[in-house]
Length: 309
Image (cartoon, rainbow, N blue to C red; front, top):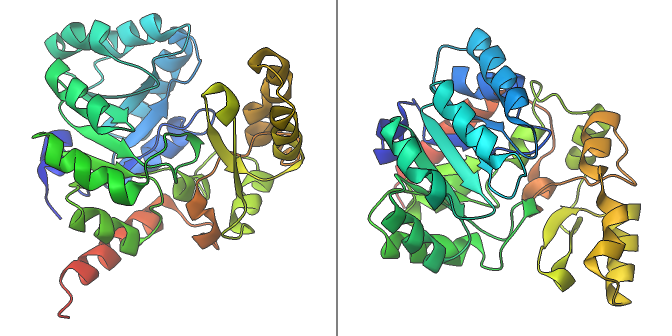
């Protein structure tokens, strides 16, 4: 399946793995790259030298293209922005902000810049700033989210910009991928499905919580202070939502989530940790290799797109 996204990124399949904090490290990114998609290393709040180390380790595991997700709200964003240039990274995705301050330097270094957006206005702004493509991410996604659904956001962004659009949010199989293409997307970004992969360096309890999920098992915290985050329901989310309803400030709520994602990913605390996952978790019933996931996504998507109705 060839699209402007596969041509832009030099990949076999128009499938990008999300740059998830504490999850998107070298083992996962390399596995996705070797399977024909675009693997991403998640910069998150890591210092530049930590990201540099991940990049170099990833290069030892794959000869195929991979990129780095730069979290613009990170206190180390400036350092990571320099590291991707110094290490010759060719693809950068960005989240939580506007990458305009880095755009000239990245473009001069030959880096393809793909911001993640949650609105048409942001998509237009990013195209004007020089973005090579856009990830339009719906509210079904895990982690930090916007308000518009993937079904409504993607076609509106496609109509608003000329650069390729990559759909994200609520996509875990060939049906979701085919639907994204029917909405005008030329690629998909997938997170939760890749968390439940054999190569993801995530505690088994985290993966098992995703596999055991039902359709109603996700919750959104942080709406009261404008920073909504989707994760799976547990003791932490129940307490957080209760305190939000009581009108607690963001500062008063921070103690609940400080280090909680690492606690879930690395220690397997799926009750008091933050188990970030999208609404699509209820569709994931097994743990497979990245090769199996990508092969099935592409096969089933192509079959649907070529189906005679």
